[in-house]
Image (cartoon, rainbow, N blue to C red; front, side, top):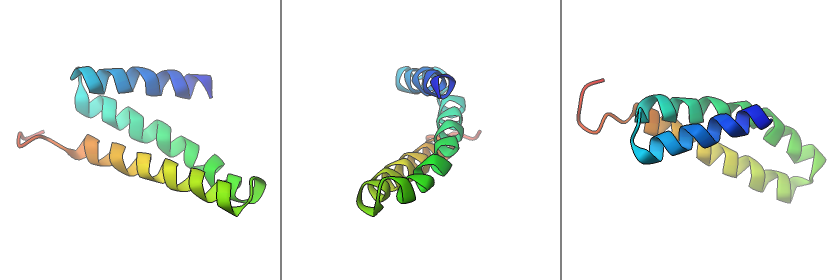
Amino acid sequence: MRLTGAAQLLAGLGYTVGIARRPSAAVLAVTTGLTLPSAISGLRRDGVSKGLDQLLTVGALFGAAVLAAQDTEGRPS
């Protein structure tokens, strides 16, 4: 989990600063996708209310990262 967090931090900084935006967004999408199984298992472990909140949060972050990775700002890839 620490490696995933470090990758998300570096990719987030790269995306924010504008250095390699598409690769940074792709790294964010992959690392967020890796946390989806634990969010799904959280539905059973933490109860429906808290688990569903975590699942929706991770799902929204994953969707945003995928859209950011696909965005070309009007330029071809």
